[in-house]
Amino acid sequence: MRLILLGPPGAGKGTQAKILMDKHRIPQLSTGDILRGAIAAGTALGAAAKEVIDRGDLVSDDIMVGIISERIDADDCADGFILDGFPRTIPQATALDGLLADKGLELDAVIELTADTDTLVGRILNRARESGGARPDDTEEVVRNRLAVYRKQTEPLADYYKNHGLLRTVDGLVPIDDVSAQIERVLG
Ligand code: ADP
Image (cartoon, rainbow, N blue to C red):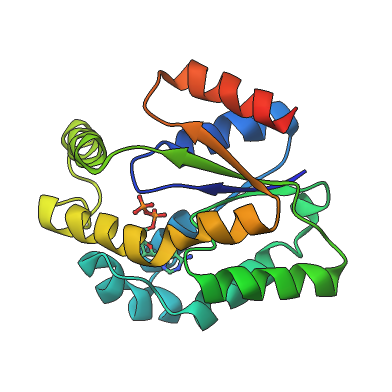
């Protein structure tokens, strides 16, 4: 099964990706985790991405498409994958369509988790406090920028995937288990 999890920062994509990963035995491909790994490892990619990420802006489409194209060729993606944090722009979505077509693969569904901005800001700042502020992009100012970037650049993907007949929208404000149950229902 090949899935995309779409939704603003703090909507619970990572949480649901992990539940789906265990249930369906397919890997979660989190571009945020991949980029933070590159920063921690001190690679050229990490160095190039750090400033952009710390501002809450987006890393360039070319870089992200290259990372994902390579990642979905790995053996562990043979039975599918869950994309978390990619695509984030319309050019990334059209590039993904192209590279999946080249590889002879198709998406099964795009699951959109919805939530309002104030709830999301509260969740992220709370999570940051609980984890000791592990992410430099979790300050209120940067979180609000990440959400603004989401509304402007990523939210249009919902219509894009609706037009492709792939969009399944789920309420991200209910408890974790209820979100999972809704996801299983829409995956039918
Ligand atoms: P969030 O909690 O904001 O959804 P992620 O962990 O998915 O955060 O990503 C953190 C940061 O990494 C983003 O704010 C962005 O700078 C960068 N990033 C992650 N995925 C992408 C992508 N597909 N395109 C561009 N930038 C990305």
